Length: 306
Image (cartoon, rainbow, N blue to C red; front, side):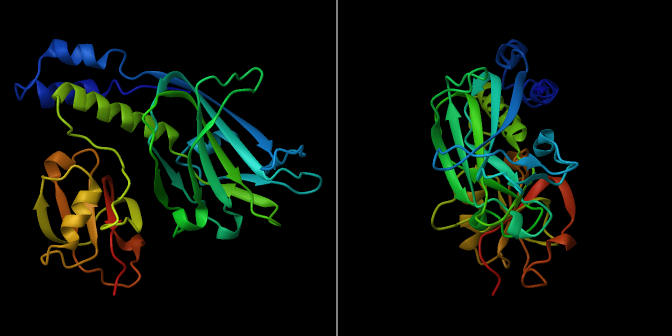
């Protein structure tokens, strides 16, 4: 799988050169190969305690590449008959090392019974695909019960990582006494592209203009994120003085003009479109299927409805 972000060149040239903020040569130097990278991926099985196990099988109609295709709802693993492994391991190897700090995971469309028990995200610099050996460090471990509150919904898992790695691994642990496990879309390509785009934009503009998903502060925890949705109605515009959705939520929570419990945030254009409060939701709990769909906004809920 090969991808690049060279399409940003025109946008950066328009935003930077037209405004007189940077030169064409600076853009060309920063863009380089346009973020081109190559990723390979593989599937393996293991037991959490390290003991030998009999591999599970992909369900009929499922394929490994389904995990990285946002148009396909899920990948299904069947551990019936003699299969005994309790972990499914997806290894992603990149031609060029990069620093992953978050990944967007989507819950599958079916019953939560078939969710993995946990997911762990690991990184390695010396993994060898031929011998399947290498030293792995754990970046994050999360319970799916805590991550997903709705079906077929994307949620960012954010973690601390300041190092560049060539190999990343997602370990999905199967629930005890549940033979089938379904895994939704894994947004590792989206994470790479957004990370590269943010670093490139910030480098050219010489300022922290574009941010990435970050851990929410205690004062404003992210309880729900609805991607590609916008408010049914906006209550107040708080301006462009915010660099993360967490900052926007904290401001909204303390502003009496924000009558609801949600904000709208655009990772692509937040420095231009700013922080926007949503009006009080007409239903409790919210019916997100009634929210307008969009490719530019996400809705963050920072308080439960009364």
